[in-house]
Image (cartoon, rainbow, N blue to C red; front, side, top):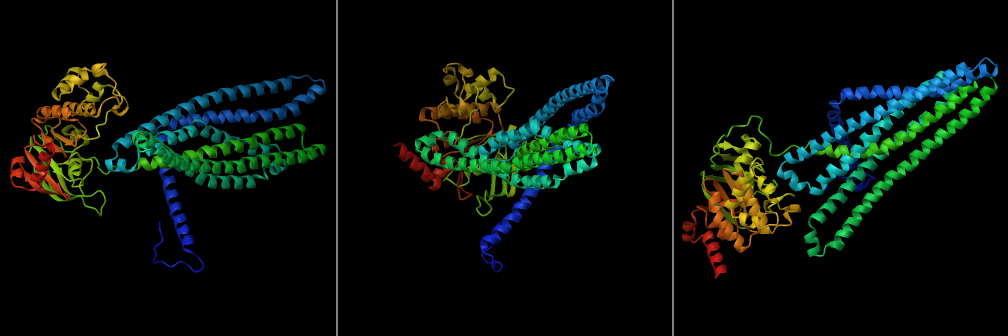
Length: 614
């Protein structure tokens, strides 16, 4: 939120004060929204585990009851078990109490083990579901989201943020539930043992609650800041390592190190801030607890001398007070974990509430046998509202036609391809496939009918065969080989050390640019779409590889609609029709021979290409 220059600041207050107040108000509104999203997401994750959580509560109640019974049994042992022994009446009562203490300890150990086992299983199930849900949602989100949301932030969501929640589930809730039950049970038992001494013991409780509230408020801000700063560190690291070739080629290392050092310092300062809060809270709780024990010991000792309190009661008080204040340390640790996990959960819930801009239709239309006829009806599109890319485009591509699209950079060629692939939806108008609006087709049907091969021919870690099979996962080995032969890739694949079982390396790093593109062509051919889009798909090929692909393209493009976007006019030669685009409009449309004869823009491009070959 910004302050308009036309506004007038209140008397005695500068602009920064006004802006600060507005930013604080906006920050509070955002925080409320994020917390609501987080609670909703957490509720969804816990809903399927309600019965197990109910069992967990019963187990932890039994465990804490056993733990709380031990000081009370010590009190009975001192006051009712030792006097009969001193009077020579035997030790039966004391032995019974000792037996009960041992039984309580065994129950505590058994239920504790059961609690940790069950809570661990629930926690891992929740993390499994969370990772699956986040990964699945990231894949469903539109290209527009992924183009603005960096890969480093995606990795941060699935790694550091999920790990923060994992820490909460593995140890945080255990500490909290145990601490709350211990505090409540101990407070009740202190008052039951002796009301006056109990009230003295609980007298510092308001101070303790105030300190806890202060820590909760401050730590919420501090831990949200740590999640933000660690995400920036991961983003910079991932982008630097992903673009390591460019970094080293342009000697970017010193500047990258400088940026990383600054981001790392911000992360360090954010963590230091949270640790300073802990350094105030934890010693504060310890000080209050020890001071309370000292006061109760003095006052309880005086009451014992006066005969108003039994020694066993005083001993039980000391044990209970130790149990009462020790959980506060656990609660402080829980707040550390909770705030870190809460900030992470806010970010994850924000991602999960992102709606795909390209949405699945509620009632998809069937397209059993796509023919490949593509129509643009009054299509308008822009990535940014103020900057139109396509202007009321009307275009019809009959089924089976091979169309080349040429034009200067920014003319709208790739946008045309993205709209046919439905990576984006038009702002106005319709894009039709066989007379059906693409928005009425489900994603599976559309992806089976339309395949796009881009200049960024991405190969996944795995073998050559696995990367070709990506086009049709159920394809047999024979079909994979046939696809490679069809586009002319078989000879080079067969010459690799392990043939089709050769590992391509990360992002296909063990293959040349031409080899990666040929594998991408084989993948597209195996998918056998009705519409094939080649977006600068031969730009990375050398001349021999391009000629090889040119021969194979006629086989690939047979009996299917093809849209070829290319700067190299050698690729355009096989097209039946050429579209020349400029400024988001089709300015020339016709066969290559007819356009060359008209002496228009395409004729000029063609002549320039011929001159370059001379």
